[in-house]
Image (cartoon, rainbow, N blue to C red; front, side, top):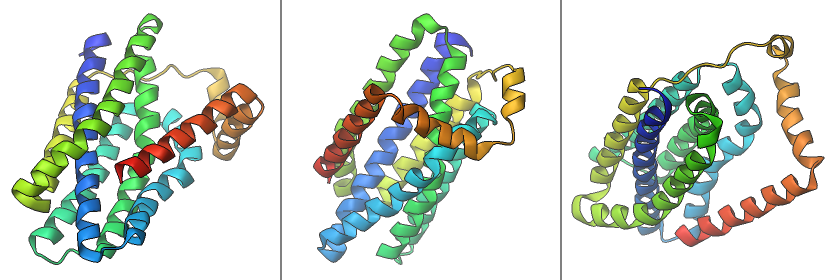
Length: 238
């Protein structure tokens, strides 16, 4: 499936996966607080999940540019599914502990660092430029919708079927994302002479992104605004 239809298919799979992931994160937060009664535990769970993304993000974009976007997205979903599946197994055996959440969160965070760069790069290859605004709006709806819907669904599922049920639902959403990616056609960009000359310079490509932003005050200000919006939103969710 190609073009806007292909993008819509991938978008649908990704929004389903986003909701599933956010449901698991909400359920884990509730479970961790019930087990310990400490806000520090919640902060550590979030830190271990978020830190790999912060560390790897400068390099993720450069690596994605050198890789197959579709394959990167599928591997990202698969890696995150492994983390959820491991937590499901531990919870089913009634041996799940807090430190397991730290490891699983960090493991999933490594793969999630590549998910959004690959997704963004794939979109530019799937649809014409005149559809970029529409696609951007759909992505914003997916992100905002998952933040609003997931805690509600997560709370309902947690009360109805417990933590293991939430993990099973999350794995089902990963399956949906995986299938939609498999069915969609995501073209690879044509290799240019500039791209060939830049190969083998991963560190320079990563640093260039920071330099580009810091040299443009408007972009830097926008990044700072987004940072604080996400920070406040994270505290609001917790």
